[in-house]
Each structure stands twice: as structure tokens, then as C-alpha cells.
Amino acid sequence: MTLIKTLKATAAAAVLAMSAVPAFAADIAVIAGSQEDGFFNLIKKGVDDATLMVEANGGSVNYLRTPNYDNFGPDLVNLINQAVAQGVDGIAIPIWVAEAQVPALQAAAEQGIVIMLYNSGQELKDDVKALNYFGADEFLAGYEGGKYMVDQGAKKILCHITTPGAVNHETRCSGVEKAGKEGGAQVIVLRTPANLDGDITGTAEAVKAELVSDPEIDAVISLAAWSGDAASNAVDQIGTGDRVMLGVFGLSPAILDRIKAGTQKMAIDQQPYLQGYLATSMLAAHIDFGTDVNTDPVLTGPAIIDASNVESTLAGVAKGAR
Image 1 (tube, helix red, strand yellow):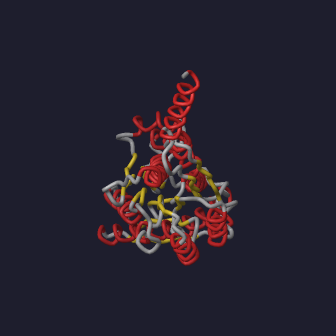
Image 2: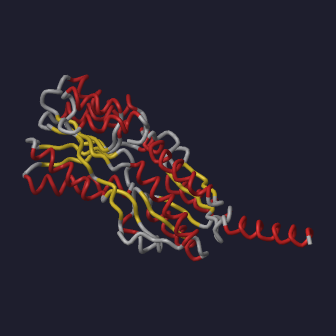
Image 3: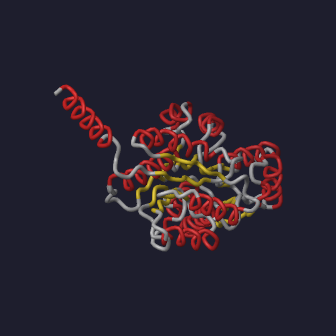
């Protein structure tokens, strides 16, 4: 009798143990940008927090980044293929280089791998059969940034692309151009070589050369936090801070300090923490439980940060989430 009770108790415990883990435990890859790009540390904060939930349900998350942006398209394809070879159930990824990434993602989707997009590539979601998109509407973000500068009196805006050909960067400047045209302002696009990515000194020289050669430029919109620092250095070096307004995509303590001090006009926040957190957690939840989000796409931005709301943004930056 005792043996029978023991066997029954053991069987019941085994059933409970199995029921505590979902039938499908998601093993996913989150693919991101350059290891030298601090923006993706904010994405990773969201991914790391979501990973706690994934691991609690028996799954895993592998965060993969390109070494730099010098060989961007092929490097991204290599990471996609690496994830596929590892047998992942899902891939969360931005689309920056469509001609390289789309065929690789289509091949992954044909193998049953669930694709989730974040940060860039909203307009390509259907092409790769992606589940959803978490991020900013890049055109809208550029438009709102350009409109802000025009409303502040800008007549000639320099829109600086740090990664030429990248879908999100080109789209942002297209939005700036539309806002400028509607508001009667001219927009000039500066494309610096990808090998200058992260090079604040070299990028500052490139921006400075534009400002010196065209003194009518009265606003600069940079597309990354570090290049916003470069633009600020350029303005400081030639003493044009009184006539050149600065705007930037992204946040950092230095950017917010400049906004507080009045030496930078605004920043455009796309909330990368939410992009990483939502893309990771919602992809895993879909694989594990079949859940989905009815809102498609899920927009995490844009939000304009200026002197009117800079104080409320500082706490998030201090914690590495904004």
C-alpha cells in the first residue's frame, strides 16, 4: 500500500512538473546593430529584462550584434543564418539593408521560424511574414523633428545620415525633407561614410565643413546620439551656437544636459528599451502560448524632448533605459 501511494505521488509530481513548463519553450535570437553603437545597449536593457520571462518559461535568448557597420548587409545575413543554424524558433530583428536581409528572412520564415521586427523595417513586415513591428514610424519621426525645427524658425536644415543606405536613416531624412518643404525651409542631406560611425572627431570635422561652407544652415538634425555629440562639437568649434539649432535622434546624459543648458534645441526619443523588451517578450509569448497583440504596428515613438519635459526624462536615462 505504501509503495502504491509512493508511486502515485511520484507520478502526480511528474505531471505537475511538466505542466509548469509550456509545451513550447521559445528559443529565440535577437539581432541588433554594431557592438560599437551605444544605442543598442539600450535595446539590450529591454532584451535582458524580457529574457527573465523567457527563461522562466524554459526558453532562451541569444543577443547577436554586428561588429561594426563596414560590411553591414552581409554581416546581418550571417547573423540570420547563424540563428537559423542554431535551430531557433524565432528571430527579432530590424531591417536596415533590405536587399540583403529580406531574402534571408524569407528563407527563415519558410522553415517555420517566426519573425518579429523592431526598430526599422515596418514597411517590409509583410514581405518577410513578420508577426508585428515594435518601434517608431521613421518617416513620422523625421517629419515631426523637421516640423519642430521649422516651427522654431529654421530656414535651412542639415539632416546628417551616419549610415548611408540604411532604411531607417534614409526614411528619417525623407520625413525631415517633407516637413521642410511644407514649412518653406530647405533641407540638405549629408551622408558621411560608414567607416566614420562612432568617430566623433572625424564626424565633427565633416559637419563643421558643411557649416563653414554654407553659413545659411541654421539647424542640424543628427540621426544618432553620438553624432549629435559630434554636431555639438562642430558648432562649438566654429562658434555658431547662437544661430545653429541642434536636434538629434536618441538620448544620453550629455544630450539632456545640453537641452537643459539651452545649447541644444531638442531630441527625438523612440524608446529603444521598449523596442527590445516588447519584441523579445511578445515573440516568445507567441511561440509559447499563441498570444498576439492586436495593435499592429506598435509605435514606441516619436516623442520630442525639449526644455519643457527634459527633467522627467532624466530618471530613465540614469537607469540605462532611455
